[in-house]
Length: 290
Image (cartoon, rainbow, N blue to C red; front, side, top):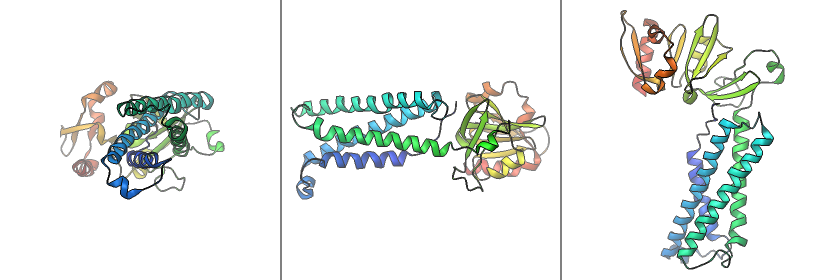
C-alpha cells in the first residue's frame, strides 16, 4: 500500500534545532553571554542537534514504514501499539544510548548528573508530541468523502485542485475492496489510462486501481503537476519518462520508459505510450520545465 507523503523535511530540521537548544538550556540558569563565549556550549549544541535530528528522522522513517504496512484507518489499535513501540520506545532507547556515550566521554554518568530526572522526561514528551503530529497529519491527508458517498458501491477519489476539502492539490483518495487508499499523484501514480469504458491508474509499485473519473477530468484537476496527458486515453507522470524518440507517424513521439518501471508495463503495447499530435507541444514544454 502506498504511503502518505508528508513533505516535511524543513519542519524536521527546525524541530531538531529547537529541541536541541531547549534541552541544552533545560534545568540550568540561562546565561547567554557566558554560553556563547564557551566552546563547550557549541559542542553541546552540536551533539544535541545531531541526536535530536536522528530521533526526529527515526520517528519519520518508522511512521512512513508503518503507514504502508498497518494504516491507522484500517487497523487503529494494532497501529497504535506498533507506533508506541517503534515510534516512542525505540527512539527513547536510542537517545539513552547516545547520551550515555556522550556523557561517558565527558566522564559523567546519566545516573548521577540528573539527565534521567530532568532532561529525559522532556525528551519523551517531545517524542510523543512528534508522533501525535504525524497521526494528526495522516488523518488530515487521508480524510475521505462522506459516508453516503462511500455507500454507492464504487471506487471513489478525492482530488483537491479546485475544491475546498482541505486536502493537497496532488492528493488522490480511492476506496477499493473495503480499503481506504491514499496517493500523492506526483510520487505514487505512474500513469492513468482508459481501458474500455473504465479509467484506471498504475502506481509506481505496479498496482492497478479503478478511478471513478474521466481522463479529461483528471487532466484538468492535475494541471500544473508533473502529470501530462499524451493521448485521448493516457496521462503519464514525467517521473516515468527517460526521454523520447520521434514516432512512426508525423508529429508524434514514442516515450522511452525508465528501466526501473519497464517491468510494470511489459504487457502494454508500445503504441499506448505514444504522444499524439494533439498533445505533443504541451508534452515537450512540460519536459523542458523539469
